[in-house]
Length: 270
Image (tube, rainbow, N blue to C red; front, top):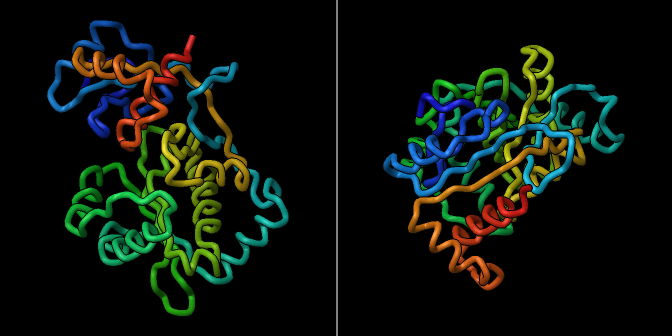
């Protein structure tokens, strides 16, 4: 949606979100109404005051400088070097991802602690193509066999690279650490070669399906960029949220839990 300060707003799981959180501004009531009047969306997530000095309950995981091997612990340096000995890391085309990515995607999902629905190959490939003009892909290839064992799907917005998807075949992940090589090389490429403002793994996760954000902070010197976040809803959803919010600890539906966690964070903002 054009005409709203702070980037274009697009639907993500039926919620309107800005495609550039780093420049998003506080929405005026008229702009909130305009977004909610559009079809397909039930809520608006407004993030502003990005990278504020004081902490808050909402943040993005970002990295804005690259310190090479020196910024890593001795153990992490060894794991990165192990990956480079065992794997080739390079940018790949969307055609290469369509050829090998779905196999990696399915294998990765089998290893998740929190199970989620697995896309069909058709839906998977359609998702790859939906924002192809702003996507870049990286792959990790086993040197012994030449097969792709891990990949990253990134979304470029201005001078920000968002690490959108990171998948690896679990057996190779334990043997040759493809995540370590991918993240190290992507950090170097985007922050040094291209001089981007920062790379990001996105907003604070409201689910427990992955520990990637904690991994990036602990292993690769990412940090929390705190910001302000408010949620707005269509009238009927606002009523539903108000009614069920007191019982949020008892609800076991994942999508509803996520929405109520977002509402809890929104209410915590001053």
